[in-house]
Length: 120
Image 1 (cartoon, rainbow, N blue to C red):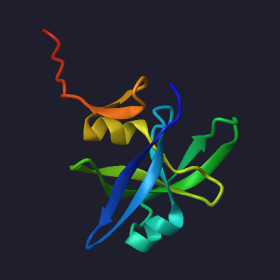
Image 2: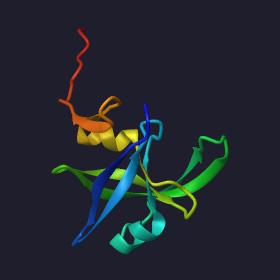
Image 3: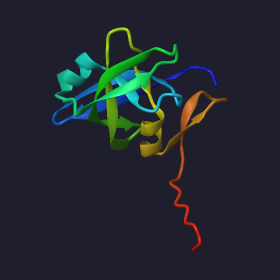
């Protein structure tokens, strides 16, 4: 797919910060440096275990933050990343905001929401 970054706004109450995040649909959640989240006033809600791409198992705090990409805004779960962790935009945020990855153009593409009903 190739690696690319996207600029996002992270918001909480009357504070916001812009970050360039690596787009990673292999990561379920979005990872943001814990110092940035704390500066916004984001509080951990729980701890969660993760398996890194290296196979290493780690535990991190998880909270919620409002994210905005190209005018689309939503509250998403976010991992409190440590100093050596990469900051990534994960698949949950992409799904919630309604984006998919365009691997050719190396950018995000807006998609329509889909409702699939099973016939009973």
